[in-house]
Length: 326
Image (cartoon, rainbow, N blue to C red):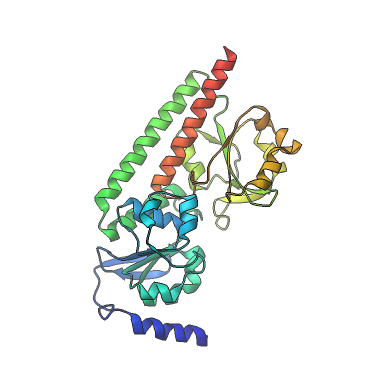
């Protein structure tokens, strides 16, 4: 407690003199009511999804948590982050450094940042989202993603840019749905069932995305079906951690997978294991490996990239099946 009090004193000392000036944008958040002076000029992001959203709207944050991780995983507009201050880890941001940067707004996730919210809110207006991968039964994850995006765009004064990005996303969905329908009508799609898996480093376990994840919901919107019809629930972040044996229930489905870390030595062993090789979808050559930057937990731009990659892979696989059958 003494340490926290000391930190409060340090933060107050370095706050700008006009910190308590009146604001003109009122928002109700999961942490309560906040006021934000708009348009926001100096923003710090503490979660990859919101880093992406801010960058895609044409604004470069003055501070970002886990910059290297963002560049490895999400990667949208990551070159713009050169020279941007790293403010610690997403779950453990450097509060004194954040205060010294004098942000107008801090954006993070309740999941990771609720414990430090009292300090963050003293430094600046702080907007914590309830993380769209945690369904609440009132709004679907995909709808909540775009609600978050529009909120951020409004605060940054980038509503028109947001409209363009959403229009591009909707166009991609329409085109992807048409492609999937065409493959079905031509009998070229061996399966319209899909699953997304993330292998964990140094472990036989993997994260299997559930039907209440943003990624699976997005794929359902283009005419595909969830091969694993399981809901994660509010505490699972849109996935469940399972063993490889569980994958046998997927049957003949298209399984897209990637590794959590660039070092895939353990994954190589897994992919040569008879348990993996005898899975129905492996035998049917319906597996697809993604790079780390095909990121199913990102914002609208990353999600659009994800959809395009899935459709491109399915189209290529369908052409291969057609050629083999000829």
